[in-house]
Image 1 (cartoon, rainbow, N blue to C red):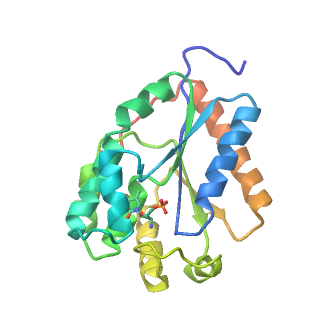
Image 2 (cartoon, rainbow, N blue to C red):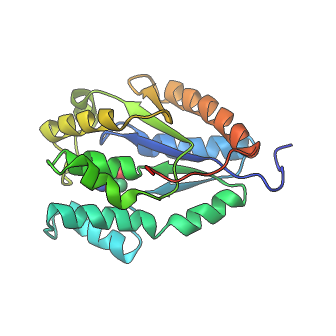
Image 3 (spheres, helix red, strand yellow):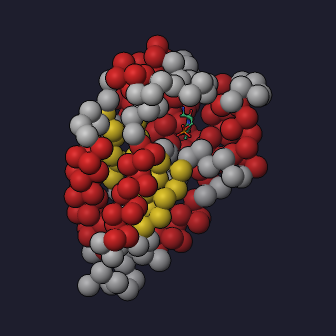
Length: 212
Ligand code: NYM
């Protein structure tokens, strides 16, 4: 029964380097789940629609300069401001597909040289994802995909460091997806994995907190 009452949605995070295909795969995933009768919604971080999100956006476009720690905390605050909304959606049975999350926060800031434990601290206590899908592509290959858009961080040498930082963050909730395949192959693979998790969460797996 797909409309099982009282059961929660799954929290699924999509991570990866810039240009790995995250954003289009996230929308396809939401559409696929909906079509199969599992309600799903897309979240995206940074969420540029809030006041904090606008500060982040202007930093990424280089319209403003911020100290590395300051921008790190703004990215984290941008997740905290969505926490209760995310929790209530999950509790109402909606699966959330989240395009970037705290792992991006730590991977990008620690690639600048900030201490990893310092980077993790502000995100501790956010909702822990049930599943993290890491779209794996080499930094070289990502940089060839239509080129980078000119935002801060979209440079090959920096992306190589981000890839290394991501490796350190992998835990039991991660699955590595080979993102070098066709869009359709990646889409199908992700859908099948996520369906399993959606079913597990409906059967009463409880939500937990990140990095605590
Ligand atoms: N980014 C994203 C961070 O540096 N820290 C974070 O916490 C998050 C969520 O923002 N290059 C970086 C990664 C991207 C950039 O993301 C914008 P997107 O997915 O291109 O909108």
